[in-house]
Length: 291
Ligand SMILES: [Fe+2]
Image 1: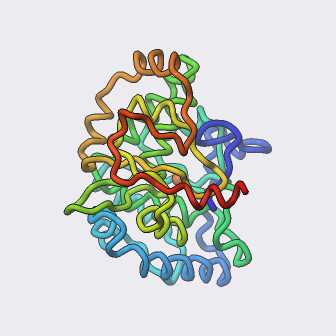
Image 2: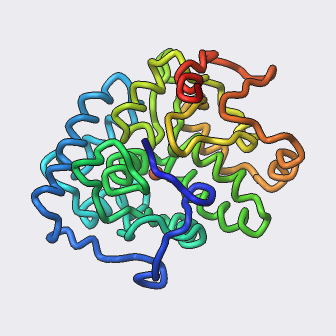
């Protein structure tokens, strides 16, 4: 369902950089009626699905953003609001950018957004993140101070992890939080990850299907866990609340990279005796696919 990446979370863009930091003009005026129509279809579909599934922060922040069903949002207007709330801005990029470029943007509180939108024939499949995934999925949570600071720290940590040869481990933390994270809220599990929030099928699967494991988040455990880039996740990790991200932003990952690198890498369907489980998944969905 989501997008494929060739290396950890952000892959490697093909082609020549359009500018040194890969930033381009959004060219909002040039979106066609068909492109706005794809946005509208996706926006309305997710807006129906997310109440009762997405966390309160996601749903409430959406109300405070200049984001409407009728048209692809103008990044300039979104950036004005984001800047006031959490000091972030959006920059348009042509697609996936090299890791170092991505981390440098995040470390400067700039969120790179794919300028293009998927075609009407590919509403549920993306080879790389487009404007719907990046804006609808990520921007409501970028209004949240804890996630905003965590993502900033992730950008800084990414530049360090590159030097330490630990990008895989860091990318897993990002994947299982910012992209596919769940949290506890009012005695239930709720979505905060953008990869889920922007996906019609996974926003239901992650919470309601008996197949995946739902496991209490543990940083070292997550660093060791492979993730799926081509299908629904086999496991989701659950935060106590969003403030746990602020605690994670304070942690020095370097010693954890070393200790987790000495342990076996875990497959997405694995369960450890030390795991605190919300749900032990049946694995039925992925078993059927492998059969
Ligand atoms: Fe994303």
